[in-house]
Image (cartoon, rainbow, N blue to C red):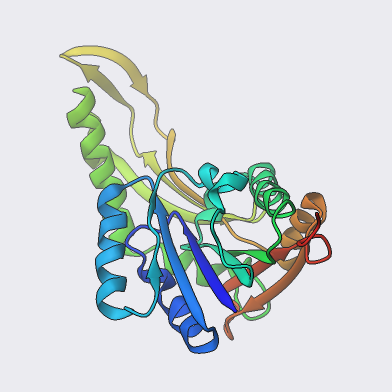
Length: 259
């Protein structure tokens, strides 16, 4: 069979390399499509795959993953094609549940109109479990590098908007929100301070105010199953031994070859 690996939001493509290598081992032929809005990222992926996995046919696409929700995207494919679309890098945790349900349904509904079997694989962070306590998630995200990244972001905001947030009066924090099943990072004001623009005060920040910098939802099996049911999809969940990461495979096998 011919296998087409569609890497949604591919970036440089390195996260999908192992999947493509395994597909080359198991399938007669493989096409790899790095899909990203960044031309530079797609070109980087092209160069890496041409050098390290030259047996894979490259079909790069610069654009949005919405492009791949159109049946016209899937043209001139061998009749024995199987499609695996991957959403790597746990990006799904940055979107709402409703958006992810529409994302899953959008792809599966498009593939319902094709004569090929297809599946969508979301790579997600697991929610706390017996193997993965919430503190382990906090420890994984509460590293100095993440804090430095958020402070760098605040410096960029000051520079680009000509503001003067005093970074020495902001404290970086990270914690797990059990209600929202998400890791949250924020800057908290440790004292009252003004914010000026071009030397003119525009607001006063009271002590204890929070500026949320990052939020990443974690996925329990129950949440993934709920998303699958809402999208009318079959679901298979694979997980790492430590339960930190999951591969949620969504499909509509019963209707994939509907005409």
